[in-house]
Image 1 (cartoon, protein in one colour):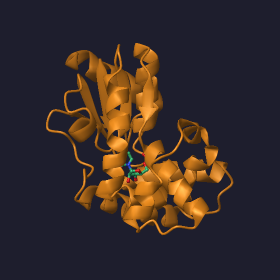
Image 2 (image 1 turned 60 degrees about the horizontal axis):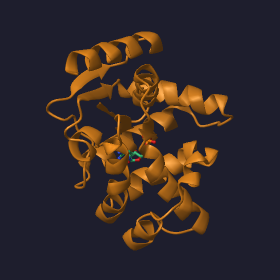
Image 3 (image 1 turned 120 degrees about the vertical axis):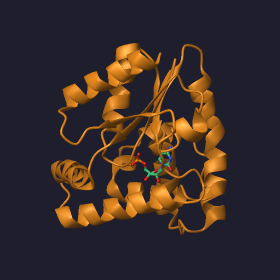
Image 4 (image 1 turned 45 degrees about the vertical axis):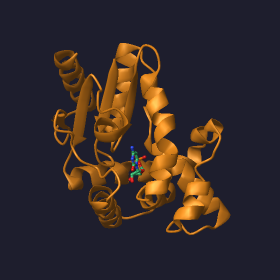
Length: 205
Ligand code: C5P
């Protein structure tokens, strides 16, 4: 069984994808980490993320980089949304993701284009959303706990800029697949979001 989970930043898609993977004992890939890894390499080299050739060259990285805690930082997320708009970057990372989705027994993948591009034949597709104010509140709380002093307003503005880049780019923009089921987590606890997600998968399989 292949489960595709898409949605914008801080919608809860990562938490839901991890819980589904645990529930169904499936391997899980957070595909945002791939774009964050490319971003991290460019940040470390001082390369311009707008330079498509430099970004494409940075796609040839070892899986070990995916465990680097610095990939979770805000700068890597912001630069990831710039590099992910380059068609050459998406092309370089697509096969890795498709291979993960095709493995025996199935998989759970979360990202922006899983249901539309990476696994259009997924058995269950969820599109996770939440209002931008609530997503910014969640992200701000996370960052504060990690020691960041960024203001809520700044986090909200960054999130909106990221949403705009992710939804308006020409290459694999963030959008709900026609056969995906929407799940709005704005007013749900983590536990009820997860049980709704399991119900959706049960209905689809
Ligand atoms: O999900 P996460 O916030 O880690 O993703 C970081 C960035 O990577 C996103 O803003 C998006 O631009 C890009 N991304 C993407 N396609 C995916 C996953 C992430 O374009 N499947």
